[in-house]
Structure formats: structure tokens, C-alpha cells
Image (cartoon, rainbow, N blue to C red; front, side):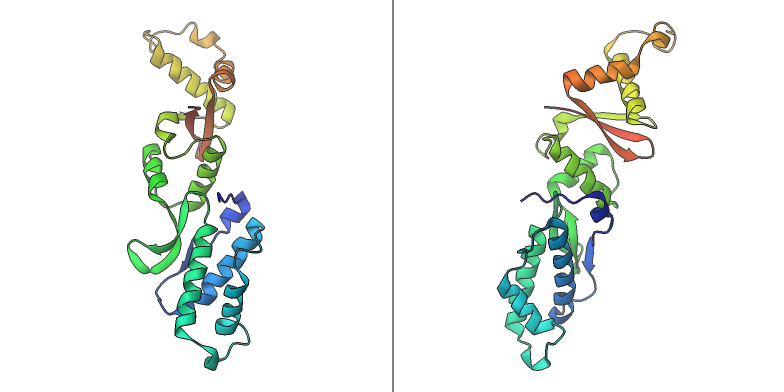
Length: 221
């Protein structure tokens, strides 16, 4: 199931769930808390099944007792929680231990989308931004298998219209064999914003804002 979180949820998302411990008695309540948040955000009350909830209540619930602790049950419940969190991961992410630190648990970008983001020249420290971009691309039918063909480059502009006009002019300069540095007319007469609207409506071009006045350009494939 493709999980899409809204902007506010992604801004508050617990990308790193736990670090520096492998003790089930420490991990269980942390995983449980995140699973409950994801269940609410996704409106999936059955994210954790009744058996898992019963074990959690027994092992680490408010009224749990030391005598009720069972190592095997704790390990099995932790595995169930991990699977549930992976099932609730934002589109393009998975839940598990970090590749570089087996005691650091969280939500990580999967390999196929990591390669795609390298194509865009983006950094690797903004999972919130990545998740938003991946959700937008997925909504347009773009996935890791098609993203390379769909990606057309970058544009600049303080608004989507301005960035689109910038890209339309770039495309014209690339396609036409003119000395654009010396040519002034008809550049000053061309409605580049209108040209972008034609590209968007007629040829399936689209823009994705990555902040700082920079935009990624895509074309439907």
C-alpha cells in the first residue's frame, strides 16, 4: 500500500525512532508510540493487530509487571511492530536499522529512489522534502523506473509561472541554432510564460519546487 502523508504530518514525522540501544524493553515502547501516530495519520486503526496490542500492553503497558516479561514474546512482538512500521512507511521509504548503525532505527529512503534523487543532484539530509517530492511524482505516474526518462532538468524562478517561463526559454535556446547572446529581437517580444503553458498543457511538462527558487522539470512519459 502506498502511504501518502500530508505536509504537516511529514514535518512532524519521526524519521529516527531510536538510537543507541538494542534492548527490547527500550525499543518496544518507542516503536509502539510511532506506530500509533502512523495509524492515526493514515486512518488505519488496524495497523497493529489485537494480538500485538495485547502483547505490548502486557510487556510494556502502563500496568505491566516485571513478572510478565517474556523474552521470546518480546522478540516476536518487536518483529511484528517492525513489520507494521515498514507497512506504514511513507512512499519511497522503508523502516529498519540504518546501514551504518545497527542500533539506529528509523525510516530510510529505499535504494531505487535514492538513485533517482542523485540524478536530481539533491542532498541526502532532508527526508521530509524527499517524501513530499516522491509523493508528487507518484501522483503524476512517475516512478524510479521512469524518472530518468521523465526528468528534463532544472529551472529558476520565484514562482511556478516564472520558472516555467525560464525553462521555456532554455528549451528554445537549446533547440534553435541562433547566437542568443547577440540576438535581442525577438526575445524581448516572446511570451515565455505563454510558451510554458503550451508545454505544460500540450506536452505534459510539469515543475516541482525544491526550494530556494529552484525547480525540477519533468515531462510525462
